[in-house]
Amino acid sequence: MMKLWYNGIIYTMQKEQHKVEAVITENGKIVDLGEIQWLRDRYRDLINETVDLNGSVLLPGLVDSHLHLIGVGETLLRLDLSAMNSKEEVLEAVREKASELSYGDWILGDGWNENQWQLPEVITAAELDEAAPNHPVHLKRICRHAAVVNSAALELAKIDTVTPDPEGGLIDRSPDGQLTGLLKDQAQDLMIPALPPIEEEYIQKSLREGVKHAWSLGLTGGHTEDLSYYGDFTRTYRAFQKVIEEEGHQFRAHLLVHHQVIEDWHRQGHSFLSGSRYVEFGAMKFFADGALGGRTALLKNGYADDESTNGVAIHTPDKLKQLVYKARQYDMPIAVHTIGDLAFEYMLDAIEQYPAENGQRDRLIHAQILSEELVQRVEKLPAVLDIQPRFVASDFPWVNDRIGKERMKWNYAWKTLIERGIACAGGSDAPIEPLGPLLGIHAAVTRRNPNDPSRTVYGEEECLTMYQAFELFTKGSAYVCHHEHNRGILDKGYAADFTVLEEDPFACDPDKLLTMKVMLTVVDGKTVYQA
Image (cartoon, rainbow, N blue to C red; front, side):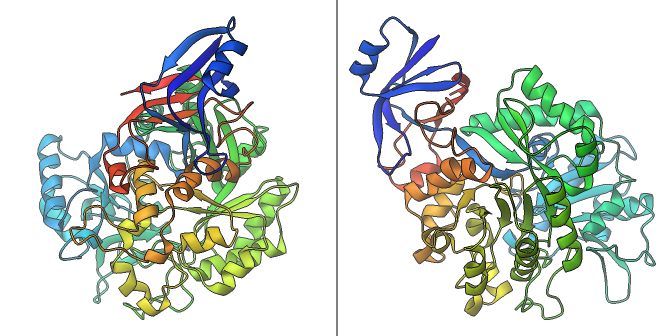
């Protein structure tokens, strides 16, 4: 059954400002596109349905190149701390939650960020003990590279003053050796045995909520990393199959496969890009370092605001090479979290020793802290930088003090990277950042925090054009997952995945992106969301 989409502004994204009057789709594919009268004449007896866009703007479906989709759903179900502006607000939210729960129930929350508070002091176990004396508390930081817990949680996890730091993690201690309640990176895993069990129904519900939320923001797909956080690989993958395939929540889920579950994945006969129409497997994912917020991103020259540390290496350089070698044995590219320049350097060393083969492309996720030398090296590799433009809005201005303003030239340098010919894709890292792709596009174009009354622009020379920013979430997201031949633009034979906006982003003030309504989200020619 052919469907005609017409009476709107239709951008193909094949090249800047390229538009057509109408598109014809059938069986989830674009059959043809061009002038409406020509299409009507050619397909007169085959068009069974028409969609009047009523002046709205149709684009190739927006895709988030890096998120945690189940985690997005979890934030909709749990205590959300991301909008809170002080430690006191967080503690009050914990007190209120405690009053609603039975004695001994866990209080779980996500999203606190001391860098957006007037007094950027980290929450302590003692403060949580006072707020919730009868409950274990576990609150993840916005970056998810740190969590704060109270004494009851520490006791349940059997973490005390003599517990050693695990490899790739830090148990924070006061000067007199007492536990502060802060657990960084791999130290968070010490809490897993004590946390309440994650039921399969909870995973499915979180995923269902995450998909619906993504649809409402215009996302037709996402490259998501969830497979190692909810226990057994099989039941997490099963959740994607059930919610997306069986229940019909159509969404292009490209699943990165964490190295901790890669053996289970391989034993079950999976391979790179195997899967189904909507749920497929991507690269092998692992972490090289932590995050800037908790000073665990691995920096070559250390932190300007804390000379006692240069961050945390999640794995040694030799282990990173072993992980790359393992991926190559499974005929897979890699997807690696690399924020700091030293972590990035370690990964380039590993990739250069064990390069991707068979036309595959590695992805280096975040790539925030770089240097000219590192950029020159990555230019020579079949690699894509998976960037999160919204980090500019979240990390400035405090990141200038953390890194040192004199060392910022090659950091968050999205325009420089693109104009050097390095392939880039656009994501959010949600729920670390808000999921909305239009927020990421706004950050890429304006280099501003939308909540900043001073409207300060950070690195104006790195502002992208509106077209470059939309490319990140269309062509870029397609390229990084090896689907540039059938997604990312509107053309014959490409997927009928569309994002329909109420206004033309290429003809209005960029600030309109902050409130622009998504009118339709279309996957495989089917409308999955309508305003």
